[in-house]
Structure formats: structure tokens, C-alpha cells
Amino acid sequence: MFTLASIPTAGLSQYLLVAGLLFAIGLTGVVLRRNIIIVFMCLELMLSAANLTMVAFSRFYLDEKGLPDIHGQMLVFFVITVAAAEVAVGLAIIVALYRTRHTIHSDELQSLKGWNIFESIYEFALVTIATPALGGGDQLFVAA
Image (cartoon, rainbow, N blue to C red):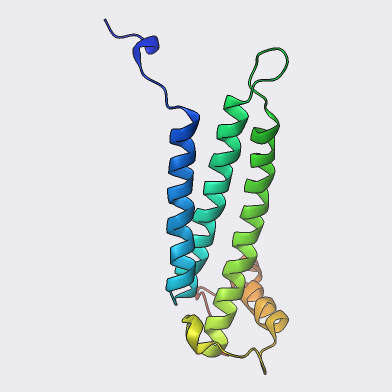
């Protein structure tokens, strides 16, 4: 007969091994890749590895009552919230860079001279958010 108690559970070392592998894959991607979007995804992978580590330690560290400590799990919710804001701002910057420089390869972006990030993000927000909300503009980008 199948019961939930018969399922073997992973220990702390297995969680830390998976988190270490995720972090190593993310770090390798950040160091070796040139595409900004892939570098951005690898940074998110590294952040997920850190979250997994916090949850694992939180699960296996018991407080004085013998219950798992939830402080690490609460911290993960804050990290996920900050990561969501980071994704929104990061993708806006990547789109603004692509619109002005017509490339997303990091080795071709050697200087930010002559690039106004605030103007580019403002134009992106106007086109993607304000224009459809006002009832016009079926296109996603307008020619600069």
C-alpha cells in the first residue's frame, strides 16, 4: 500500500547540492555568454539558487519548539518581490538598449555615451502602456 510516509525525503545536503549546481550554471552563463537576455536569465537562476538555499536552511533549522524556522521562507518572499521589480526594470533597459543600439550582445556595448536611458524608457512606456490604454496604436514599437 502506498502512503506518504513511504516516500523518502531529501536531506539538507541534497538541497544544497542542487542549489550549488543551479548557482554554478548561472555563474557560468553570466561569465561566458554575450547575449544580455541570457545573462539576465542566468542572474535570475543564481537568485533562485540563493532562494532554494534559504528555504532549505529554514526547513532543516528547528527553533526552540522543534518547528521549522520560517524566517528564511519569509525572506524568500521579499527576494521574489524584489526580483519581479528587477525583471521589469531590467527588461525595460534591455529593450531601450536594443532600440538605440540595435544589438543585445554585451561585447558590442562598450560605452553608454550618447545614450539617454530615461528618455528611452519613457518612450518605451509611452508606446507599450499609454498608447494602447488611450485607444490608439496597435503597433508595439514606433520608429524613433
